[in-house]
Amino acid sequence: MSSSSDTLLCFQHCEKVNIFCFTIPYNCPVCRSDLSRTDMTIPPFRIPSPLKCEPSNFSLLIKPTFGSFTRDFKQGDLLHIALSNSKSVIFEFNENGISSSSTSSHLNWTNFLSISLSVLPYKFEDLDEILESTKVMDIWAADRYDDSFNNCFDYVISVLNASLQNSSFKLTKLQLTQDVISPAIKKTVRLLSIIRNVLDNGFFLQSTHAEQSISS
Image (cartoon, rainbow, N blue to C red; front, side):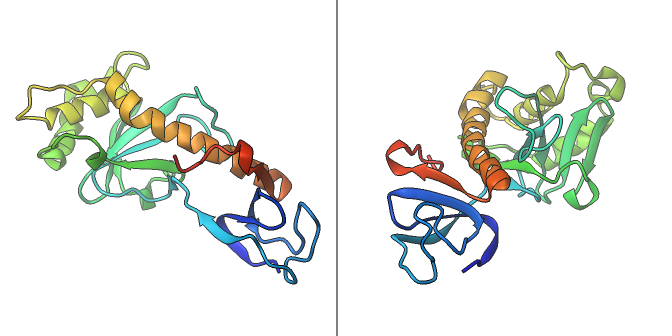
């Protein structure tokens, strides 16, 4: 039966067990029946991945500082974050200073979370102009980078707050982490656990009575 897919699939056959795979097997991993000759309780459907290879415009971009999400990341690992402008050009700050590029010319951004800034209940104004202006600001020069006190997170918070020109409110690292970053990471980690099992074993079985929804 082996229809292939480049995305994660899920189906049920003989029991209330979710079967995750990238390729539909010929035989049910639970009862070993020929899947081409028996009906499925729940036909295969795709599990959307939160990981992207291209950013949307006006988004917060997140990736592991070292390695990739799919193979290497675990909760608590260091993260690198950046922003995209209206044309989906990535602006980031690191030990090399400010860099801006599209994903097509930036090989480091191939497997990342892209979270639209529209999920935040604020109106960010003149973000394009503010991002461009950071290229010549001394505070974002390479020699001013510091892992603890002037890093990529400080850059993102500074840019977002600068765009809140008509608001007395200032966004904090804690608020952005609690409201946006942590929920996205937790959802991704749950999905990555399944993906890694499928990569290692060809499929992953999940009992529905113990299921914790990966979409919540």
